[in-house]
Image (tube, rainbow, N blue to C red; front, side, top):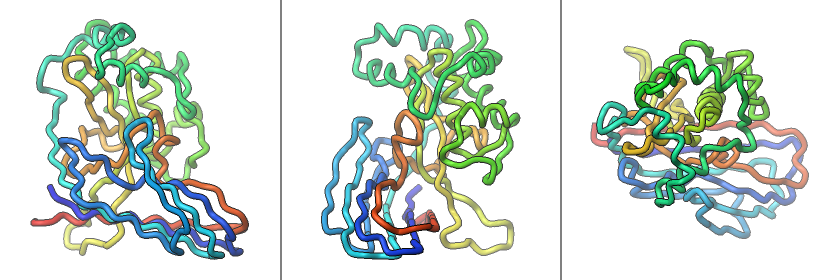
Length: 292
């Protein structure tokens, strides 16, 4: 599936911002199932300095400085992405989950080393026995990795309620787990915490999710969504993506933007400003399928 993707972020401030230093993570990753054909970043007011670099995890970051006094900042990324996802959960060998997880410390291959770093706690994901016990209800002894992963994802989808007002970016994963409410970011953090607590390597994936209008209703521009899901490493299969918010393996309707240890590594836009006072934030995402 070929998409034109637009991600527009608008900040409005009650007082002028004199200087803003920002980092954007808005260029989708390009790999075999998610090929980026084009990407453009537009910023208003125009920045006085702009650079790009690739971070430790392979995501492209854009650094820019706005020195013109402004009460509104608009950052819009437009991309053309070809998505061709192959569901791999039921294909290829699937080792018992213990065999897939525990040998990573001794696996000195490039793939093994890359996965090993996602077995540990991270700034927004701490590990504890509560997560471990919850995970082990699905990860029973000798169970194939893919089968256990699908069941854990299904249980999170069933046990947790989507509530956009229940949490914010500062809500801890422990609090989400206790209250069983949250959004896609929270559910991804919870599943990763469960997996890492039993030594399974898991990373946080940010991206976009295509949405569909109700029957008989027109498609609304800007009504698609930023999204988050997880990817767990299975020896012999590689990385297996799962979306606990929707209880699915990501499909051609999921566009990958970035991945890291948790949300903090892949926040779409962050930075520091001088001035500004109170602010309001508006995010609009649009995924237009081409050729359909």
